[in-house]
Image (cartoon, rainbow, N blue to C red; front, top):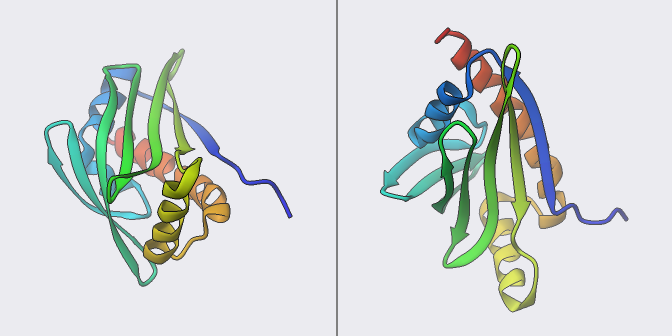
Length: 156
């Protein structure tokens, strides 16, 4: 049995400056265009609700923007029924040809009885056991980054 993975990162270079990439990422309503799980987003100030789907599973994610640093980083925390689940974010690093975008995910379900409840809810709503979530997220991140690059490429 392999050890549980608590964080994942994937990176891809996009041929636009960091400010332009940040503007696309900070418009969270567009996440449904890139993410293979997100099917809708309703923003409300520094919070938003995302609707996600995987096969026959559909679930809501309540999120709070945690970092909004234009041109550098955008991140948000996913909270389900008041329980911390994960932090999702994007770090932007300037390159000679544009921006290296690093998408990251950190599992916040770490300790105590709240962890077990959050993991059980995750299994019920997404169909993915906590121990397999990191691998699933890595695949989704690759899809997201490639779709983001394709969308940004048309903006050049």
